[in-house]
Length: 322
Image (cartoon, rainbow, N blue to C red; front, side, top):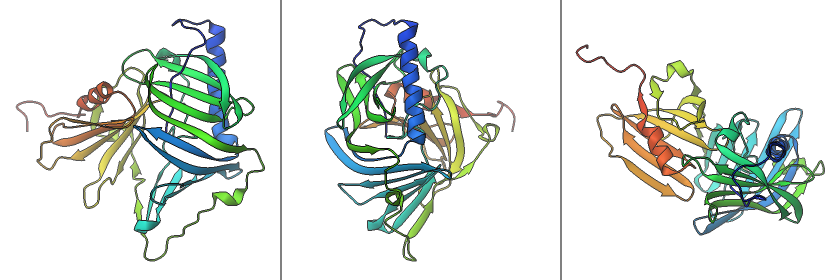
C-alpha cells in the first residue's frame, strides 16, 4: 500500500528552514507511531475508479509487531504479520504464501529513511482537517524531478499515526488513495484480534516466497540506471513462478518510493521492451544479456525504464576472450 502529495500552505517552491524542520519532525512522528502504536480500524483503498476496503489490527509488545489484515470485499484474504514475516491465507485456494514484510506498506507504510529525502522532495506542512473523525495534519512531499510521484500524508495530531495517504501525478491528479473510515488507537485495542482466523490443514499448499538473502557482490549484475537518490535496500534469490528457476530480486528506494527488479534466466528467449500500467503500479520488462529483467514500482514509467535498461552483467565478457 502507499503515500502522496499535497496542497501547500505556501504557494512558493521555497520555504523557511523552520517550516521544513516541522514537516520532517512530523514524518519522524509518523514513522515512530507506525511501529509503536496499537490501532485497529477499517480503511478504503481507491485507484483507477475502483475501491477496496479492509480491516486491520496492529499491536506492539515485547516480542515485536503483530498485525492482522482481512479483506472486506472481493475474494477472502487474510494477512498475518509478525515482525518481518508475512503469511497470506487464501482460503478459496487452500493456499498460504509466506514472505517478508514490504518496506513502506500502508498503513505502516512510511519513509524508509529520512536521510537526503529533502534533496529529492520539497517537504512542507499542509492543511489540518479531519480523517475518520480525528484531527489530522497534512505533510506534503513534492518531487523535484520526473523520477518520482508526489505524496500527501495526513497524521493523527494526537499520536502521529498515519491516517490517510495520497499519491499524486500532479497537483490535480490523484493516482491512488488510502484512508481510514474508522479507527481506534491506544492500549485498549483487543490483542485477540491479531490472531489468524484460518489455520492451514493437510490439504493446504504452502509457498515460501521469502527467498535467500544475498550480498551485493554476489548479485552478478550491476544496476547502472538508478535515478538520483535510489539505493539498494535488499537483495535475494527467490521463486516468482511455479516450475520456473528462481529469480534475483533487488529492491531500491529513495526513502519513500520503492522499486523491485526481478532478473530471470532468459533461456534463449527474447522479450521485446514492454511497459504496462496497472493503477499506480508500473511495470517495464526487457531482455538484458540473455536474462529477462522486470522492474515494478509506484514510480513514473520513465524511471522504471531507466532502471531496467541500466541492468548489466557485473563482469561482462571481454571481446575476443572465451
